[in-house]
Length: 585
Figure 1 (tube, rainbow, N blue to C red):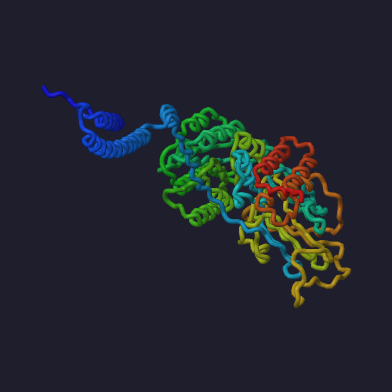
Figure 2: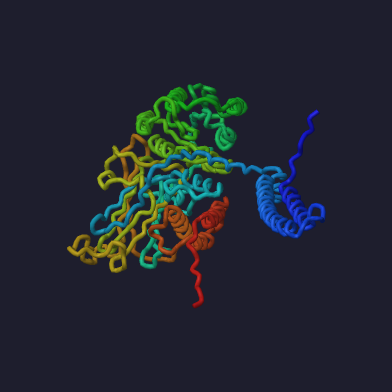
């Protein structure tokens, strides 16, 4: 049987070697038997001393080798063993940080807007543009702010923010036994953001018609039920909005319902407004799914509108969608051309925008313009109530078509002017009397507001003087020196009528700004600030809030109070300049 041999540690070998060396010295010193001669003893002593010395050297070397081996062994153990702290950390459960969710892709589309610049009245005294009664941009801006973010600058059309609010303008007056479709109001007051300029307000008020007195309506609800409409702020909100309008239908009104997704379908043929249960049931069954063949849906809607056409009545398509057309005709210019051609049939088209993320504001606004209709954005059920019920007369009944405004400034009095907003509504001077050029419509009870910022001759302006005399104001004369300019409006009472004109001089007289002008100025400043505030100087959100809060008036529907809240939101969301901190020397 073989026995396992256990190796001894190096330090034991060294100790034994030392003991053996010491024993050898002692034995040599004593002799082998104690009987040796002196000579033998001397020789033995010398030999023993030499041997002892050699053994001592070997023992010392062995001790050093053993100590080195021990140190190396301890080092290896220390490296191999985890540190106590590392053990404690490893004993704890591992917590993995969850990656932040990727933000949803934002594919919203807006037409680029270039702000109107300052114009020298001596070089270009005429300012011409089409009216705009759309309000979609305001509701869309509100949606952005309520989501906790500032709107894209091109989402802000300042004139649509201003025209979201009603103003107390004079009703049209009867002249020579005839009443024009709208009255005109002008007002001049100091600008709140520039002590050297004035604000000129042009206000238009169409005569109102109670809903009960409107002619019969032939309405086609054209509803996008594609997959992109599935979210709660799209098809579900849309269905509830349409049902609000159904409740206000009269027996003489008729409604059709057309849907489009991958294909098109007539869900409800023309149905009398008295059969509300059938209309509501048709709306309730709408479900989202599929792609978006919007152009095909528009064509089918016009066919249904033609089928239920009411002579001398209201014939209108209400297109409700997020505007994300991706099947069939998707080219923007082709869609506009198709709708512009169809409007010759006497059927207008309005758009109701819904949703976020893939919203196509550019298409919604321009298609409504081409269809002689209105553009609204529905972000809440309250907005649906406002657009489709409370303002139904304005939304549906047109009292004047192709309404154009032309302001001719008096260069002897006005040095510079700037039209605030209406960038995509401007027209050439010659377009004013060219009745082939399309312009905006105004509905019953609608108000339209336009603001000019004006610098008078002799006041500091932005353009400065020309070295070579270009753009110098004309010599002052007594001719019309009390006028800032002449305001002209051109319109058609009906599509087939000849155009008519209204002209009124704008007096130079300066008055304290009315409550309506102050509030309109606050809204105009807000829109400009959201777009960068290029012309506002130091007039920021706090000043806008104060101006609006002091001009709220009776605020019957709470619209102005809500505006003040939105200004506060925008101020909180905007980037602040770093504070200047003084450092003691």
